[in-house]
Length: 384
Ligand SMILES: O=C(O)[C@@H](O)[C@H](O)[C@H](O)CO
Ligand SMILES: [Mg+2]
Image (cartoon, rainbow, N blue to C red; front, side, top):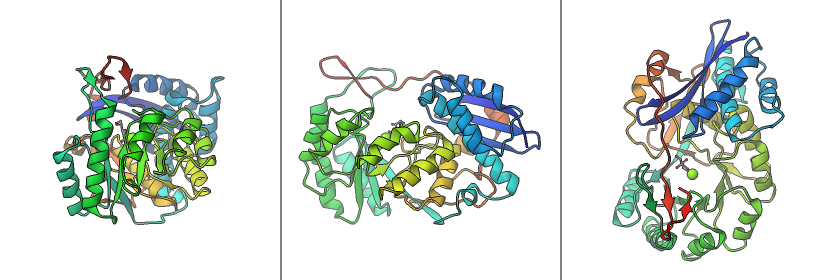
């Protein structure tokens, strides 16, 4: 079964750009994948073009070997852009493999270990009464795992001031109150979106009673494991790290030094299902659960579900939090995964179990979009 074409669709779908990739074969079986390098999709599309050049004519079933060739064929190995492209192609190849054999992808990954994927939900409300009410609503609705954000999302068009000290004061106060209200049978975490320094992250954690937070996601930026080691010496809150990591090599120093308590694998950035399964196994050797990152579209979610079904060490998968109106997804995607009562059902359909309305997708154009820009009160730049 030979690869006959690879098409990349960086396109605005409903509420954001998605970067979807279709791999076709000479036997008519095709697969879909998705790439996760949000806001730089055209760079990924360029990388897909390069890979297409040498992938056409290759056996679509040799997934592991094609992964090695994509990752290592350029002198400048790996990196986030190239690996985001590899991820989408790899996921599409798994979709093809499942469809060709008539089995769901999880069966090829070792078989399902669970029938439902437990999820965490995110309250995106700004800290204060609204946030507390929203979390109470989520808890009452039965959600077991609730994650807060920084409470300040900024605007893609208007520069936003992010005052770290105000954020720390508000967040620590609100989360302390929320924990008292929720009791201890709910899991509570926060994604600080790598906005803090080591000192600020320590200060934030120290403002809350021990046991308030079950995890803190990316309090600081993630290119320096020793910075996390420094932070670890100042707080005991478990760290959830890795949504931006683009290989098992990025995860390795964190896992090997015990710095990462939840592995935030993103199948669309880490190198597809091939690489995600390896990272999950590396995490397993350290008794660490995978908490997948899943902020994109239905193809990403479908692939993530297949991984979640097949690994032993899963905590909770993310429900894409930022865009609640998914009505357009019903037009673009067939059999897209739908969250019900805090879980995703594991699809038993061949492949990933999701299909794409390609004709409709082909009509969509790409819209340039920039992530919000945040500035400190003194006017200097800080991460979104
Ligand atoms: O954990 C998350 O879902 C966030 O870090 C998002 O990936 C980020 O805001 C980009 O959408
Ligand atoms: Mg995050």
